[in-house]
Image (cartoon, rainbow, N blue to C red; front, side):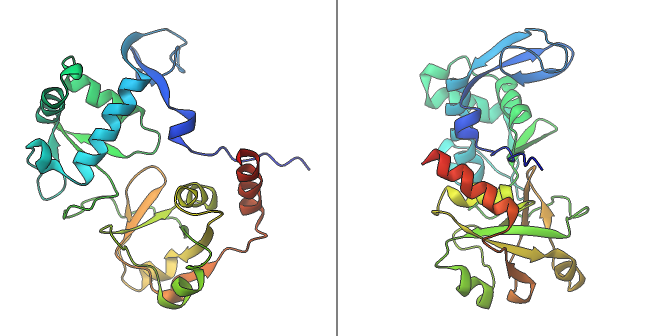
Length: 245
């Protein structure tokens, strides 16, 4: 049997410095040709510009809107026009920045970090500012996953998972996604499996935030189980990390 390794979702490595273009039929896309119709489309911004603006957007929409004199409502929304104007004022090299560049970054983000609605934009997860989430709570997978260091594993299995410096516990929809998220902070992270059927039945709320990200206030220990280190999906991730070291 041939085992195909899952693609590792790493924006920094796979998407860094890919230009954004706009197809008049299919909208914004990354790369040289529209993946739907193979047309070149219209140049919007280069990859380095996209990465710089996206990093600044993440900081503003998750952590410090006040540093850019932006008003954020209780659900985390900020005016796209005010955001683009503020970014351009703060960095004169971005004098060309317009609303459409913000929309292009949102539309091409593979993890669904941002959402646009009615001329406003917000981050969908990873906030440290106080907001009230109004994200969808339906179609939650039966199992979700959380990465931690191997040293923290037993503590979390006994005491549950808590948000720490963030406002919410961030869960992933697969072992692969959780492993990629955890590898940013931990060497060969351990993965905890979350029984969301029992969580929801007990009255807990889980929000669907980004493409692979789900949020909840806390996860009590009775819903947690360790994903074995010999799990096939986890072993594939270990192989991939070994190739990168």
